[in-house]
Length: 148
Ligand SMILES: N[C@@H](CCC(=O)N[C@@H](CS)C(=O)NCC(=O)O)C(=O)O
Image (cartoon, rainbow, N blue to C red; front, side, top):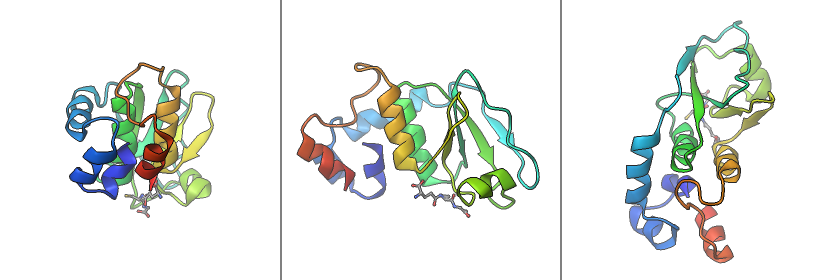
């Protein structure tokens, strides 16, 4: 799964992944950013109104943790809207939520979800059983090893 990208070599990935990492890369590159991307200022600017149609990911283009979550959404063919925030001038609502770390997901009902691994799990769970690439092996041991 995507979180392994940050901690494992390509060879290790190939041994434990449910799918070839090259396939993930190819799939993600064609599926990323299907919805309008917006930039949002920080400081005292309030959070933008919740997108009631699509999950939103508050993030930053240089953050590898955001990339992990973004790739999972792309690989699972789950549409999402990206909102780039200013990490040099964090918004108060963001600081209050999780000290201003990205990624943060906002679901259409308005709940905010922190942490790239949790955001990735969300994408995996909302995708239908045959939707997108299979990222988590069926074998529970392999699935656990993938998460280490
Ligand atoms: N454990 C977090 C780490 C996220 C993280 O460290 N993101 C960095 C950007 S790559 C961040 O938001 N840093 C806050 C800052 O720049 O002050 C996750 O996996 O989501």
